[in-house]
Image (tube, helix red, strand yellow):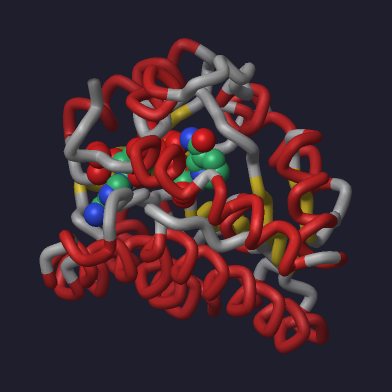
Length: 244
Ligand SMILES: NC(=O)c1ccc[n+]([C@@H]2O[C@H](COP(=O)([O-])OP(=O)(O)OC[C@H]3O[C@@H](n4cnc5c(N)ncnc54)[C@H](OP(=O)(O)O)[C@@H]3O)[C@@H](O)[C@H]2O)c1
């Protein structure tokens, strides 16, 4: 919506056509235009045809926002091989493949790409093994890519929102022992666009998350001891089989 409010012409990608059409209607209500591209980004054939479809419908991109992701919470031992594949694919492989597909557009137009990380890009947590692995990998990918693309004028922004009121976090928010305030997704979107326009490289929102990142960097063994103490709580919090 933050891009729609600035008059951008949008290509919306996700698996559910109805959900995309709902967002497109909101974009239209703001006076901007959006075209929907229902795609499962974990399926390589669908992913690979995306640039061609988007180019045919709306032309080259100035911005690429890699927002799609999944948590895949719960004990690692219980994950099926397909969950392992999907989580690593949507959180890490898909952004890399999409960046490569749209890189010629971004280089030609000195464009902007956004990667969405998390607290777990910095601090790995029990119960969120695949998310921690893929989001920290995404951060390393973004940093290396930023250095690589510096001469091209393509801007790479990585954002790390704290808990944000979306479908992903709703089950956890209901189970959390302490009701922590969540960020508003519209606010996160607006701050992301502002950070990109200000040519910032990396932004993390949420005081608690920022303190934990700094503490983990300064004293990782202390944080690991605290996490060991909170093991059962975290495993329960992230367990997607148990959303009571
Ligand atoms: N919410 C938080 O507290 C929080 C905090 C830090 C970072 N993040 C990150 O923010 C980003 C957005 O998360 P969210 O909270 O908005 O989660 P969400 O409510 O679960 O939304 C996930 C989005 O990704 C799309 N998606 C998921 N799997 C896909 C697939 N295989 N192919 C194509 N699209 C797919 C979904 O659309 P379909 O279901 O229609 O495919 C949906 O639009 C993620 O990268 C997440 O890791 C979230």
